Length: 234
Image (cartoon, rainbow, N blue to C red; front, side, top):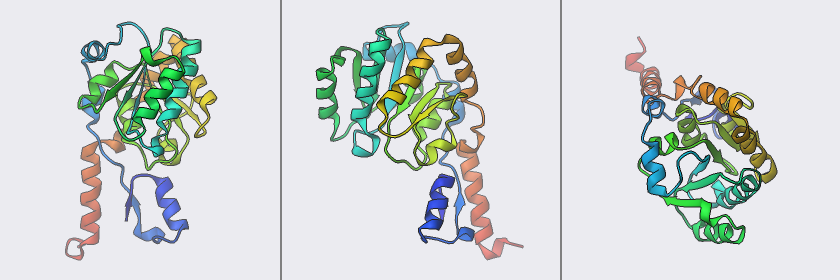
């Protein structure tokens, strides 16, 4: 059995799904270099209608209950009250999008919350982003968190499952309990309002991510297959 996080591996053992010696953690790999060298943020802002020079807070994820997209809209409203020049973007789509759009209008932030739909230039989007947010109720280990950090974008996320294995509070972002709108907004505001902390977190964000490189993932899988195959054990 292969899991993407140690949390999932431990939970699977506790639930009796598999024995400890039959499960291993192999991270879902991404193109780390592509995100570390990302560019094109100016073009993305222009396409989304986001002014240059203003903070942009982004959530990448589908509009399904697991990702709690309505919580992001509430976080955006709370942040907007403290950082009035901030803009927000939600990337993805799904059944809860109409409800999220309605909530944005009712909370008075529709003019500064962009619903971008599906996006095939995530690296460029992150180049335009000041802070990334993920309001999920549960996860394996979300690639969007790793992608954001690889791009040097501080992360504010819910402390669920494998997310806690990569977001280091006070170093590359902040964690909050799922559904805690106030704590999530506080983390975002703290980063937006402190240029020194934002710069420090951005510099640290891409550190300690080598195990998430896609080449490292393939090597780990090859090593596992060789160990499993008796003909290759000698």
